[in-house]
Each structure stands twice: as C-alpha cells, then as structure tokens.
Image (cartoon, rainbow, N blue to C red; front, side):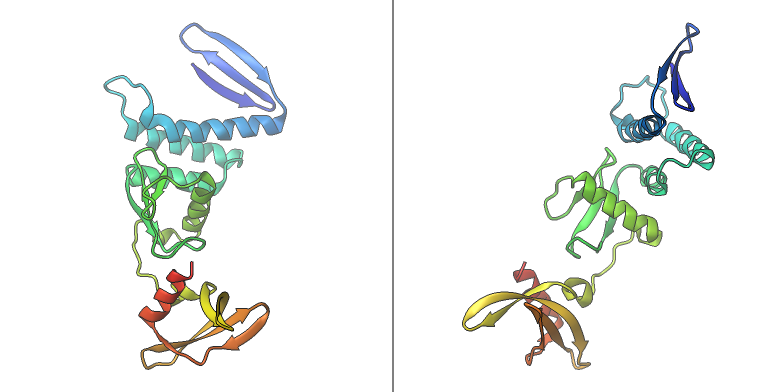
Length: 217
C-alpha cells in the first residue's frame, strides 16, 4: 500500500489489489499530514516489525533522498527536519551529539539514542521535544558542531548567568552582564541588580567564578 497527494487530496493505493481511496482535506491539512507522516516514519522505523532482510540503512538513505527531491518542488518540510534525518542516519541513531548549546547548561552533553531521541548527561533521560527542536535548530546553523565535543569557556558558563551576592546581610541574585579578563589569571565582573549596574570590587579565578555561578543556579 502507498499514498500520494495532489492538491487537497490524499490518495491511498492498495498496490497488490489495484484498489484506491481518495481523501479530501484542506490544503494546509494535507501539508501537515505529509510532514507528520514523514517525521513519524523516520523516527519509528527502528521500532517497526520487519522482515528478516529489510535493510534499514538502505531504506533511510532512499527515504531521505525521496524527501529531499519532494522538497525541491513542495518546500513544506523545514530544512532543519531534513538535516535531522540526515544527521541521525549518519550517526547510526546513537552516540555523542553535541554539548555547550545556548539555552542549556554549558557542561551538559547530549547523546543520540537508538530511537532517534536525544538524552542529556545531567538527567540521563530523554529531553522534551521542544528542547530537541532547539538543539536541531542550533546544529543546523552550526553543522561543524555535530559530534564535536568542545570545552566550555568561562563566558559560556558565566555571561548572562545569575550569581549570588550579599545585600545587607541577605543573599540575593544578580545577573552577570560583563566579564573582564584582568590578564593575571583573575576576572572581574559587572552585574545588574534590579536595574542597577555595578562592577564588583572583588576579582575571581576562572574556577572560583564558575563555581559561584553553578552554586547560584
């Protein structure tokens, strides 16, 4: 059985018996359904029931080629989705994917599971679909980061992050807005506390500042 679509129709064909069915949808619903099925087929083929000689790697290669050819004409799937398909196929559905991704803690490492989902090193669990999309969007724009582990810098750890400060004997959170390298192994920071900007008189080593930020989470 196969399906095709034309205009606002989806045609389901029984190849063995030569029978077919036509479903009428709104055009935007057809686009949604085709995209949805493409993603679901790709994401679930590993868990499918297959005959002994079914070649998943060959199927995925042909599937991606078909999707890319379709997109030259239709242009309905996001480029990040096609990039995700290709990356998962190349990494064989498993292994280190990336780390130091904006919007996540810089020390967090992300791994691709056999299912095609992503898990993080902090919880060792799969992350939310919305979080996965952020990672794929970032990797699509920074494709040299796929499978490449980098060492987070002090700026990755601390710039724009909260740090605990003491105000009138109370511990309060302030945001680090600027980090100045004093060129002697120490760093000085500027903070924003309730709209007031101030440079702290104290300086920190890299390790001290990162530790302060992590403890302020």
